[in-house]
Length: 159
Image (cartoon, rainbow, N blue to C red; front, side):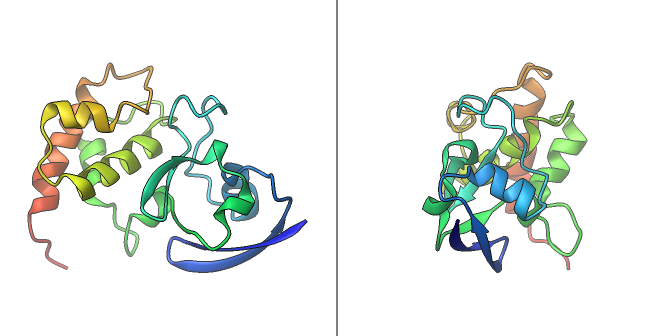
């Protein structure tokens, strides 16, 4: 067992875990943040995507020890004060979420994409989400949700 300290969704946590335990399992089992999903377990589907130090990673491929000292953002970490993030709201409104397995990864991939390219082209959207597989939507609704999110994230919010 190794002591692992990380900042997850803005909170610093210290956990005792085997160093080679998957970050995915650490998040779901030890931190009880079950929004991050396991699809393939092989880094192919993107369902387990999280932001680690600002980069999109497949948490099923990251050993827990590698996350020591890292900043992690899961799907739970992008909403604020119990309110959906505009990207989450757009996925809901446009039907970009169906069975829900790929949705957290798609939303975090979209978040990452819009951080890099606030006004992405359709090609950039397709490339930005290429590491995330969906078997339900055929991607049209997902792309529609991302395009709506571009508009929503550009608007000032009233808090």
